Image (tube, rainbow, N blue to C red):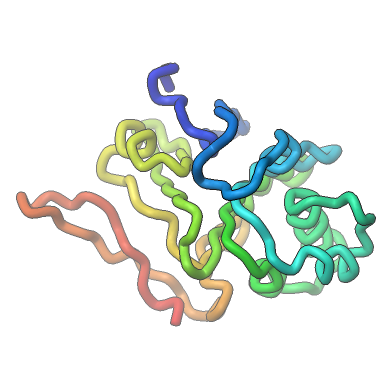
Length: 200
């Protein structure tokens, strides 16, 4: 991806093996509080997490996951994922449903080669995805980046959903219901992206 496309605080490419591209411009208008780089990006041993937004129930989650007082939203997401991965059976939908707030995140576990993505139920943080011509997953909060990189596979990431490489796309409110892509057609009859239905 050329440098002209890398203008977003939340941008990543995820081929196999994983390649990440990130450009952060501070402060970002998408977040209402002053953030340090730790609020966006954290690498914890073998887990990389890129988070945007805020979680409202941080004190409760710190207690639930046994985290110290200095833990931030990114630490909580990583620990929630580690609980899911290591201490199961704790369903993925419950992990995401426990996060109250306005957020989108991208988590990559290099040990298990797993990608885990989620967006809040209201879709409060802009989050888009698609695949490029080589089959790489493109994720960003900037629709233009994904449109340029993905063409017709561009779509908003579904509200209230999570995606994992092991389980696919699921609604965290109705995780047992299969989500099916429904193509959207523009005014000229071209398929431009898909909505997902069936999660509720």
